[in-house]
Amino acid sequence: MARVKRMRILVANEPRSYRGALATALQALRPHIMVLTGDPTDLDGTILRFEPHLVICSRLTEAVETHCLAWIIFYPNGTRSVEARVAGLRLPETDLDLDQLLAIVDHVERLRQLQ
Image 1 (cartoon, one colour):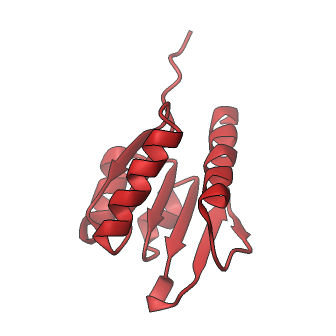
Image 2: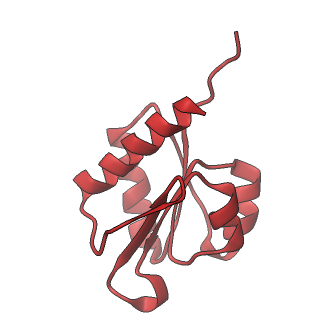
């Protein structure tokens, strides 16, 4: 029987303090999920090495779009909004609280298990 790999989340958003707080909260609330923080300037390289299922970042790159099951972009282009996509479908989010973020994480985890 093949071993099931843990879900992986990459948190590489700006500012750094938000990145750390998000990663800490996600790891505490979903301890069975692997959470990694990454430098936004090496976002694509980290995606290729870590192969996350969900990326939380501040800008959309080709690697984010093509290598990840889901992504959440906080404050794209300096705006006070949120963009999210799960399995190719954009989510109509303009703001995101912790409960909504966890709902997305749980949804991505369910989708990942179906792959």
